[in-house]
Amino acid sequence: MTKERAIRKDETVLASSLAELQIVTSSAARNLTLAPTERGLLGFELPAAVRFYQQMMLIRLVEERLLDLFSQGLLFGTTHTSIGQEANAVGVINALDRDRDIVWSNHRCHGHFIAYSGEVEGLIAEIMGRVTGICGGRGGSQHLCFRNFHSNGIQGGIAPVAVGSALARKDEGAVAVVFLGDGTMGEGAVYESLNLASVFAAPVVFVIEDNEIAQTTPKHLTVSGSIVARAEPFGVRTFAYDGNDPIAIYELAQEAVGYVRAESRPCWLYLRTERIGPHSKGDDTRPAERLEQARARDPIPPMRRRVANADEIDAYCLNVVDRAVESAAAAALARG
Image (spheres, one colour):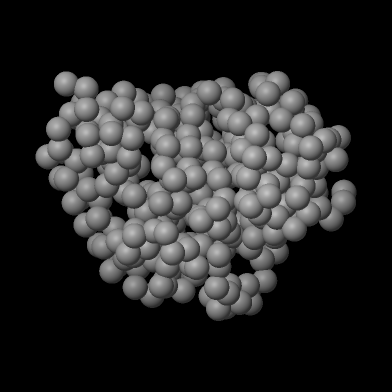
């Protein structure tokens, strides 16, 4: 196995990494386009571990509230949460330059979007179909369009779009990132995109979030071969990690994004993760033992133990979500 394909494990992360990362000024922290409120929600002024924990808690609390709002019939359409996968969103998005990089996400996009924008109120209002939503309450979470962030629920369909946008913005030094799941590995558009990205030297980071289940179908029933090795035949370098530590993911994502930006080449960033919640609402058919295994890899508890003022951050995030829901509920419906 080559060095590039070797999967890093949580236990291989050096203890010194946390302290080193805390003094690194990330490109995200230099972003001046976000409003002060959004910068505060994302914790740009905080040390890395605290910032990441706050962002993960915002994602977790928003998604738990969305499931509750759905059960009350207050959402416009359906919703797909990423509970358990928050570390991926926080680790990857914080490695980007929000001023110029482009993000393409999928149906499970809430975490990616919150880590990118801090727009909790706009997201909740959008999913509740309110006029104050990010897209006026008409697109829902599967059709977000906000600055350089876009989402779409067509599996694999965003891969060629990401390649095209990367080529269009290549001269500006921008990198495009596209989030895909293991369930998308059967889509031909993914491999056409890998081929063209390599041939045309498109600066794209293909992020694969492998939670081993596509809706209710286990990965082994639909995906053959190795997902880690998928990009190698196309001459695309692979970075891989197995774990749920946002700091380790951030560190690896920085390395991957730095490679893509410097070399103007695509890369394949494989992240083994766990989806703790259902695919959509109540459609989780996994055996109890398998669910217990997934819950054991919840990224929130270990990060909470690293943060001294976790209770304070939890209360702050909960208040943010409460106020966002109240504000959205008071706004007019976009579609009657």
